[in-house]
Image 1 (tube, one colour):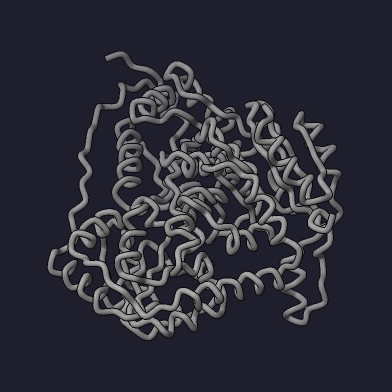
Image 2 (cartoon, rainbow, N blue to C red; image 1 turned 90 degrees about the horizontal axis):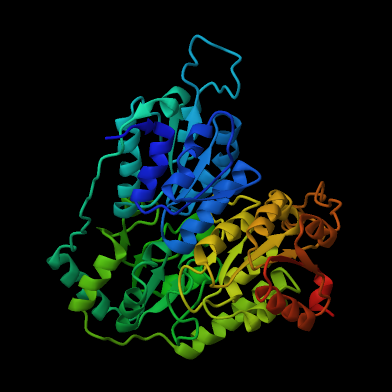
Length: 527
């Protein structure tokens, strides 16, 4: 067997495992990892900051369903990518970060890029952070990560490879193939759950991101049960928003607790029911809860599940559908429609002037458009009012809630999505966290509308301060001329000041080679 430096062998191994794209930035400490990228036939996307590289890899993973891979250097490179790693952990994204690390840090101080504990730092945000000391150990960790992405809740993994090990000659990675199969749930348990759903008069089904792989199977379970349905932000598109018994993605509306109080059975498929899903403590139910999840921790949390099922949602739904008969319920479709209209009005009142923009955007986006949004009021409104016709096509940084996500993630998403349309929705403040990644979008010639919602302030924080009777402080910042800044990077720019002009700008941007920044202000909805 011919040997190569381990840094080169890692790229060849990843290629043999199906990796086609790596995001990153080369540096003096990880240059050996770049020795084999072109030779292996992998595309490398150059970010301008490791945080951008991490979000790009995250967006690529969400768009393709494949692991996102990033190469970074020790020390500052690792620290810069920790934010994306934390976001990937919150949102169950298969992200593999391979970082270089120093060979010896116990007896030597003052080395370039030295940290007190790189492995420990990574472990605070990743599912695991490990440091191999041999080539075989490095190969083992990569295969372990890829297998865990398939067989358990996908969460980011971090491998720190000593520089001397990257430079050392190593044999190729061995071929390994693992047959993955999930056991079906216990047939007696499935029969009992099917009976519970059949007997329920007011069943509620909650669909989370963990049910996305089940797709139409989850929808069919809810339909056969005659259940009223809620979706989390991550589960949007799993159930038709126009279905008679759909409450949409409105779990965060305070009134949803009253709906839960009316339920006589709750079935939760693949959702954390986290603070960011509910924005309250209890769900509001006082009835049995069946909860299906790959993560054991979710089955034992504060929501008082009575019937926990540790299973993949696809396998569970397949087994349940084989045992279910269609049944009706006492839910009133007209009342559900009226409640949704009331909640939409509440959303509009909470953050005035955004709903018309959301509606205008929805009207011109092609089918299969994938959307990446940042922490901004535009996205908060859209998460409740923009219906999705398919799952896994709106990606928002829930949980960790990092700013600066949308632009870089959309770049990675577009790399993965190819000819399918992708857009990015940003707030004026969050956009400036990673604005430098415009250069990558221009470099790649990506057809990418980049919407920047500019209200000239941290409006959500200002509203929160006022609500808490705190005099608003440090919430207004001077913004640059975003259009001129985009043009300086080589991107196109538009500043529509009416809904019609906004729609035209989006349509034109989707048909343009290269990215287009679309600057939108509160006046746009009034023009």
